[in-house]
Amino acid sequence: MVLPTLHSHHSSVPPTPNMASMRSLLRLAPRAHIARPATTTTTRTLPIAQQQRTFMFQSHAADDRKKAHEAEEASEDLAGGNEDPNMNGNYPDPTLTSALPVKRQFRDPYADWWDPQERRNYGETVHEDNDVLGVFSPEAYTHFSTGWGGVLMGSFIATVGALCGIVYNYYPDRASVPRTYPGGLEAELGGPEAPRAAMTEADMRAIIEGDK
Image: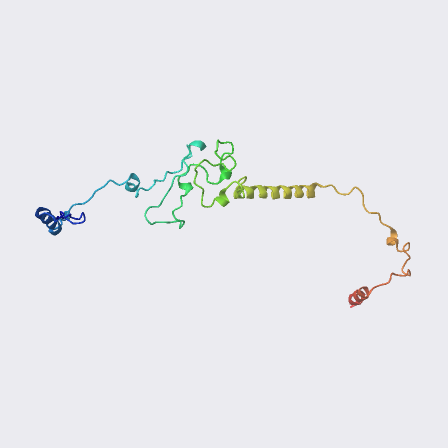
């Protein structure tokens, strides 16, 4: 009895000619390269901050017509480009943008300040020399000018001198005269024979030099 031959499950079925041809064609086919035109440029809209990167703040001249709370503060005043006239990194100069006095001493102490002690508003640019312009810096003497101080001092000296001259000319003499005695009280004081007080070497030297 002859048994039928059984085929193993691991035996592979040879591929059909159509599948093999398709694989070879795909393997050997050249890859297509997408070429971009050289003249094509990509354009995009820059952000507003980059579009205005060269914008320079314009300084506003100081004006005394504004009130303290309406005065413009903290406006940058850049020189532009690479210029730095003050050699401080183009730090803003409040004297060119503020209508208020820079030294806090001369600001109105009763104004509606954000910082009443320092007399400054919120966001106000701090001056480069704030250590000598702040409230706690030495105050500038403004009671009298130099010329008026000289006038006052000269007036005082002239008044005192005139008073001394008036007193000297109109002061009355003494109502009495010194009393005199005959012989100058020589006898009463012991006369010429009275012993004298001991003389020092200086007195002796003066007498000797006087005799010469």
